[in-house]
Image (cartoon, rainbow, N blue to C red; front, side, top):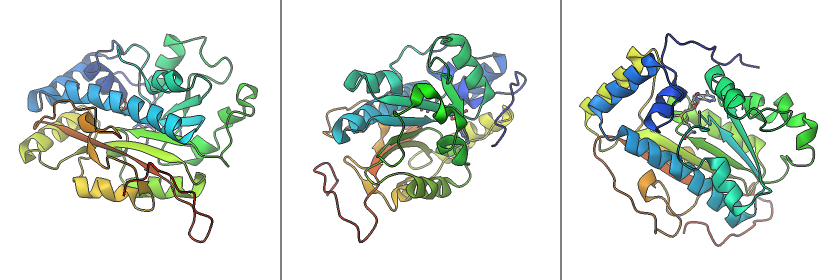
Length: 287
Ligand SMILES: C[S@@+](CC[C@H](N)C(=O)[O-])C[C@H]1O[C@@H](n2cnc3c(N)ncnc32)[C@H](O)[C@@H]1O
């Protein structure tokens, strides 16, 4: 098991910086400095962060309802409990109160905040489980999944929704994560993914945001839209495909302002049956 990130208040935490953007209260001075350096370069960063947060909840809830899925793995959940927006868990429970939503993060900061902000949550198995998306054993073989409270509620032979919202831009090899998910998840599983992109954003802004994270002893990798779209290789892309998170909805009705100072794109994709096995058609598949 990977050890995760230790509690450290001298360096910016990606989770706390993001919490600042979202209007939460779980950040320190060093996080605020990093966030404000990002905002100086890209003033729309907080608005896009909020739209990314809403995208994750909207897309996960849609997938749960559309595909009748009852288990959700929210990987890289961040600090959500003091954020004035509906989390993935809340959105999913609006459409299916019985769905099991499990949250994972590799940052001790997130685990500590989850324990402090919702002490009663999850009874014995904990509000957020320690898991690193670059080592999927820590997610899918997490000992927390064997807690008696979860008995019968997690079944990896059945489809799951996996949420990777604004997490793969912190990972060196996101294609390896997607390949690992294809190996582990049942056909019919849905991945909901968002990622910061360098496409159609000035180089100076991308450079400025990257430098702001680096000064805070953190890092972020902006990728071209083409590279992000390629993460869906081996999956069937669902409508509307890869779009700005402000424009993502299967029926095209969700439309918010898109900015030129910072872009996060999102998509949902379903894992098809292995070649040669019986195909399960679904009306929602993108043509
Ligand atoms: C920008 S926040 C996004 C939070 C939430 N997913 C959202 O979109 O609203 C990124 C989160 O991913 C977590 N993270 C970064 N790298 C990770 C990794 N390798 N494994 C698990 N979590 C990771 C960070 O700790 C942070 O909480």
